[in-house]
Image 1 (cartoon, helix red, strand yellow):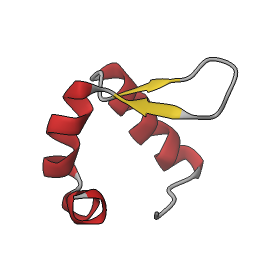
Image 2: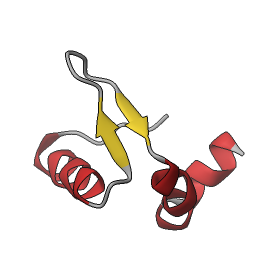
Image 3: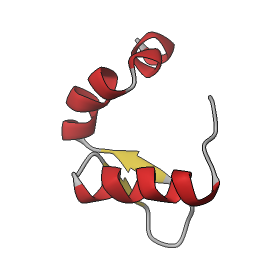
Length: 53
């Protein structure tokens, strides 16, 4: 899976959390993809759709 770090990665993560696409798992660095994220992320990240589907 590709990695996006630094300031840009933080901005993308913050936007995904704000839109309810992912949720941080307390006490870890893990993220949970929400039901909304499962519906919307493939349109935002087409490469992700082919990687998981």
